[in-house]
Image (cartoon, rainbow, N blue to C red; front, side):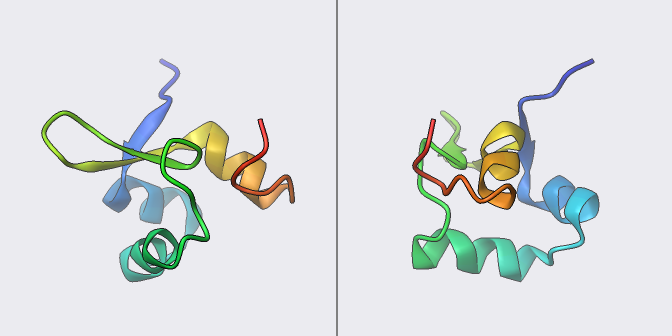
Length: 64
């Protein structure tokens, strides 16, 4: 099963970043909404796995 979005908790497990580090990247604007993360209809933050990979590879959070 390919998963496009994961919770902050799961992203922390997958990447080694702490949940606080992930939240800080979101709050500082290092990871942009609709590029690296989204809010689900229930307002929960979900992280885009593809968006994260683009960020890691130096494409920046706003590159497509």
